[in-house]
Length: 298
Image (cartoon, rainbow, N blue to C red; front, side, top):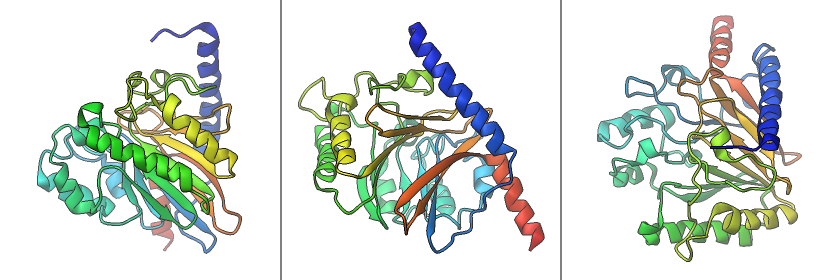
């Protein structure tokens, strides 16, 4: 992808800020995964498969018991739905039956079909909405295309219904795998930090121009104006973590492993009393070191 000078400068400046932030964060004393009464913690991980057709072994070792929710940004395994036993293996790590385990399918997860197996484990479609303690989440299946109008229209209806009716929630979180938000004001195109940049992704079957920025983004802005914070998180990346706000103060983030030099995961903290949320990228290796140190101290 060709970028003009100003866009290159914007991406370069953004990446420098994130690298500086990560340097401080990765070498500072580490936050622990223990819950407290006022704070709920969520972990987002994308692109976590390893070269041996399994999940990254570091993720296998990670203690996930201290998180209110596990949010998977796709490409969990290189061929996630090829064999039933693979889903059993994934379930043994992430507890797919848990209502707060979210899995936004990546191309490596969906390309072999057999999605009825996934529904058997999760009890849900590959796209859904869920409310939990002040946060409404929409998990998207960005593999859907207009050749499957039935499902892409159902997913679109969920998105529109939530945007129309959301009221009590302090936050709306959209979780997806692919880079579908090209053209969002103030954001560089996803190709600058993602493996995918779906220029022609369609949200519905009404028009070939039903892109994210034309059909979904304006509704998110309406939600924001009514007082609900909106966060979009994408998992199809394995480079420098990305975090930037649009001109309308919608939060966009991208984070993934799989040969990433920074090996970053995203941890979000939701404070029940204030109904506020903050987030940080964390180095996976450092989280494991801190986890081991806690075990030794016990």
